[in-house]
Amino acid sequence: MEKTTVNGVELEYEVKGWGEPVLLIGTGPIADSFLPFLSEQALVERYRLIRYHQRGQVGSTHSPGPVSFAEHAADAAALLGHLGVRRAHMAGHSTGATIALQLAVDRPDIVHTLALLEPPLTGAPRAGAFFEKAGPALAAYQSGDREGAMAAFLSVVGSLDWGSCRTVIEKHIPGGVAQAMTDADTFFGSYLPALSAWQFGPEQAAAISQPVLSVLGTETEQWFVDGRELLHSWFPQVEDCTLEGVGHLLHMQCPEPVAQGVAEFFARHSMIGVEVKAAS
Image 1 (cartoon, rainbow, N blue to C red):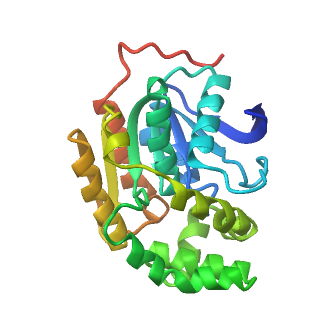
Image 2 (cartoon, rainbow, N blue to C red):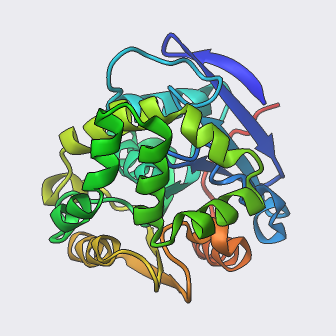
């Protein structure tokens, strides 16, 4: 991956494909969660895919203390600026989807569409029930068992036993499990506090007029099902893409149908007629 300095931090990034730009914003625990999309023809043959490592992930700068989603959004905007992209489609998974939502509020001029893969919305009714279920993972981290904590959390959020969860990640993201363990401090020490502090509700949602896609797996946690209902209450323009037999790791479990659904959404809301400055 290449590196650039934005907002005083270094970010690793990769660009692949041609066409309208798409910024892929991955989830906190799995830095390369969107790697499978770079092999999906429905996207890479029609779009210019930009994926990157956020602060604290892999070789990007590790900032002290929690990094807010507003700061992550500002980094994403600065990265697009560095690449000469004035406007882009956004695809975000989990905490990456919350960063995409924050970016649409803070910089609506650069957000053309929002494809949201199961955003963890703390205002959803069963958010508390999810974190009760994840309690042992949080306790393990507090006791110093970083790897056990990450394994337990990914199992809960992915609705899979750890063996199945590990297999799903490693199938499409070689080394992804080991990297998740390495980045455990970033996830538990930065992303979860940022999620707890994130303020997003009807007032913020009212500022977003871009097309929105809600991507959901049928085997996911109820928290994310509630999240879809919340998105529908906020956005009259929201469209649904539902994937059978997958949970929160949906685009790692079945990359092709997820990529196809996202690509079709982008195609329905093309940038034709919208000025987009591509990087040289």
